[in-house]
Structure formats: C-alpha cells, structure tokens
Image 1 (tube, rainbow, N blue to C red):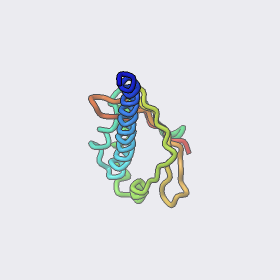
Image 2 (cartoon, one colour):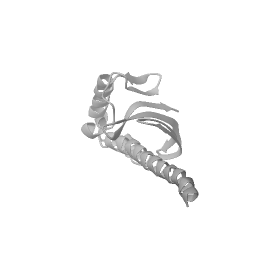
Image 3 (tube, rainbow, N blue to C red):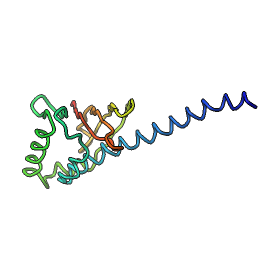
Image 4 (cartoon, helix red, strand yellow):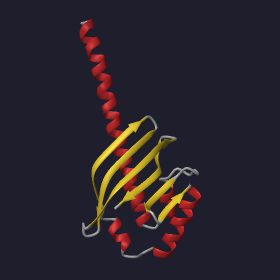
Length: 147
C-alpha cells in the first residue's frame, strides 16, 4: 500500500501542475484577445490595464512604428485612437484568428508566439508577447509583430 501511495504522489503533482499550466495558458490567451478588443473599441483605459506600466515596456509592429517605455506607448496609443477611432480598420480587429500558439510559462513570466490573421484572411503576422504576472494578473511587457 505504501508503494502505491509513493507512486501516486508524483502523478498527482504532475497532473496538478499540468492543470495549472492549462489554466495559465487560457488566462494568457484571454489577455491577448481582450487587449486587442479594447484597442479596437478605442477603450484606452481598458487597453492600458493589459500592460505593465514601466520604462522597460516594448511595443513594435514595424521598423518605423515602435515605442520604448510605457509613457511613450500610452501617448502613442492615445494619439492613434483619437485620430482613428471608428475607422473601418477597427472592424478587422474584431475578426482576428489566432493559431499555432506556443506558450512557455516560467514562474511569473511567459513568452508567447502565435500567428495572427485578420481582415479578408490576406493579412497575417507572427506575433510575440512577453507577459508578467503582477498581483495575480498577466500583463504584457513586450509586443512584437512581424509581417
């Protein structure tokens, strides 16, 4: 009986860790989805809640469109949303498909890679995120898109 219990304990911990990781991956995917939707809806307050507010935040979608640090990113997003709110591009952000997820979680840090397709399915990009778990919530500290 002791041998069976000794054999079952590692299996229990392995199953528990796997379930926790699956829950964390679901939370991370939801953060990425909701960040995009908040941006598409021009909800700057909701959108900003998905990011780490620190000088080391990085956001880049092209060699000419990037932000270093939270203050710069927030200012850029605010300016963009004020100029472009309600344009047809926002509709495409509601119709994004993501696939080929690769999520690696190490404690309170996670790296994420996926393919994102939007619009008439002719636009796609490789997406990369680094997230940190702060006060129990996953937040984005780096966002990179490569087309």
